[in-house]
Image 1 (cartoon, one colour):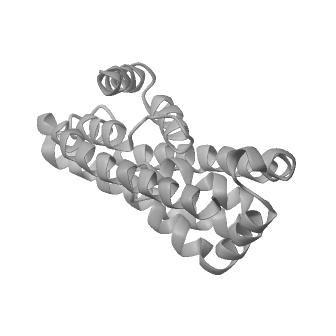
Image 2 (image 1 turned 180 degrees about the vertical axis):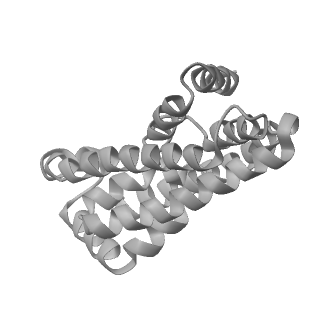
Length: 196
């Protein structure tokens, strides 16, 4: 039910605002809002196929949105360090966890940010720990741009090829979302047990 509402709102926004709508939706998609790119970009690809939009302009608008949304989340994560220092115990987080995040993003940040752009649910969240881990800003923007541009172009192209059947992508992507959510739940269970 919720997914259908989000889906219809996304279609209306793109239909009304065009490239600006794509930018806004992909900004939200790169934050913690439940806007799946699998619903946004294939529809934009269909509009490209029908001659209503330009392929390159769609990729530029969507990628700029992805970068902007990711930077907002990165900033939230960066500012979250102070919150965790004061109130982290309420979330079972401590200074050691923050130091681990920083070390992780120094060593593996590039790969993590790039690959996460292709993983449902994870791409909504990954920028926050990157900010918390103080990943190098230039590298963060570079790998976010590369991963987002490739993913957005891929989904737009699928929508372009499928034309009127573009929404079939959404049906299949829901299974990947479920798998990703189960993975996150499993991680949190492990995390809670570890900290107990």
